[in-house]
Length: 407
Image 1 (cartoon, rainbow, N blue to C red):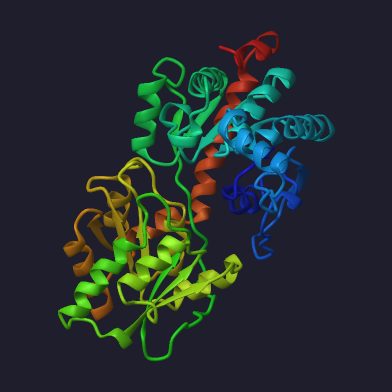
Image 2: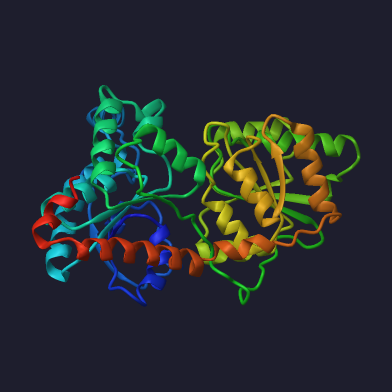
């Protein structure tokens, strides 16, 4: 049984060939948008969050505004989805008993899924795997730090890591962070299994422009991942006469905030930036395949992480311009897969050179290392880990199986 995570919508269809996979997830009424193009090849069991988060509408009454403020600022000890803790636990318990589940896999964020897996394992004595896509308690910042929240999260994470049969992280750097935080509890348990991508050779590109170069970004700009990272270099290239205003369009598949639109206007690129509302994943992949440059910003605060959209970009086999911290996991994987250019986030000149190099067509990218990251290969790694955990479990004397998950 897997709890949460878009990752398992892709892994599930492959693991389903060998296992009877059940997914416990949020009720669809809790989602702001529904994507019917994502593959669902497994049994899905939904449970609501109480209260619903994120809210469908912004609260208007004094009580609603006050409750929302207190909920986010004070009561969300693990994350804003803490309202799913009890419903998710009860639904998971019912699924385990009804379908005779042998193993639990929890992926986060949100990290209440990992708390649920830990509780389910404690009650049912089933082994569980923690699947980290981002760090949990030790690196919480900003609104994630509640009164006593970091202390509570750290204690919960230590317990969960200690009791887990195995731990999956998505980069070697993240494994090092976890091992430094919990050297005893995580020893011998951590395995690097990255995200992956679906091979989409039969998917036809969907062009966005006729006769113009297309720069595409899929996602929301936030924090250090700001739209200005691309606007400033584009402006410099235009001013130097190295890129004509009408030679390209920058298509953003995600909501722009007023600050983004102000930055676009200040750069004089209002006509060049095109904003798109929600687009289903299958259509977005086609747009990616029709683009000339796929833009991927990452902050200096996450050198250990690789943005999930990197693998979506990789599936399109179109040149990527990645911007982040030199020496980061993102730079390493861009070099390894030979999928495009990497530029330091604090170097607009290097970003401009990357844009020019890709749009001019002067560079050729082989994508030779990309084959290592197909979902087929990732599923095979997961299969080996699952078998190792189950084999170890079966080798234990029956009287010790209940104790083993708490050692």
